[in-house]
Length: 343
Image (cartoon, rainbow, N blue to C red; front, side, top):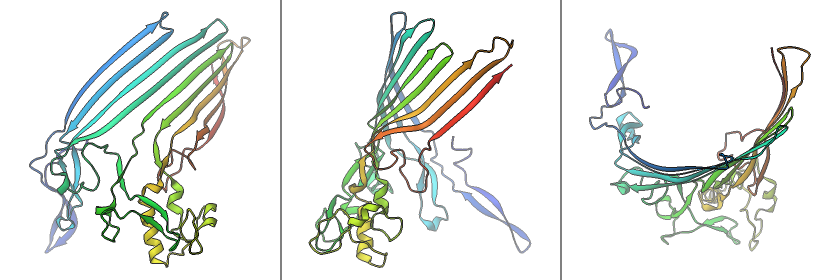
């Protein structure tokens, strides 16, 4: 799914003329070593049913290894291209367990109740990457760790004398640099996730609802707006540092003219101070329907619908736990009512 002829050098008409001749612009570089990715997969699953399948359990284990990945490898600007489609000799492993359970709790003539529960435990690991230290990915990946890790500074708190955020100088050279001091690892891969769904029917009424749950670490959105400027600040910033010797969770307020405060702020948002527990349980969907009896009108059916999405979230996260990056809206609460007529 990367397009055709990605290994060829291709050109397009520039639309401009020189001495009456229309020129050509290069659009892709030639890569003679372009080849297929390699994927090796193994999966074992077991399905068991009890009491005429009123209790039905599915268990699956899988391990997938991908190598020779096709990626866009960054290039120097002098080449005229930002990247080239090529293969990496790295091997990435994805493995995990998946469980699903369906139960028919009641199955009477007037009342029926069915439940579905599922949970997935997934792990990701970089198995090998020859030449990683000398590649453009040396500061992004670590062999034996997940490909979803982020390298961060170790946050030490607000210096009570200077009023600035401080991070650990790992190599003790008196300078804070990304290459030498970002040694704290945070894995943002969800530890597990799943859902719990129920369907209840009583005569003409039906209620469906789905709870979604995720165990994960996440970026704390508020960490991006603390101490970086004088607008869009959370109310907690009223407790920012003001006097030497004061111990506060936030550094001094700044309009952006204090260079030391700005540098400290950017070190802060690149530290583990912004990584918090982003686990949650959310009522993802709920729907109530009623089939209106219309026996007097032959061939016509009427159904009344009331649906809701993202109506309830249980979490310790300050904000929406599905909201990770600035510039994007979190999932919205939506309530919908309707009438469905068929004839």
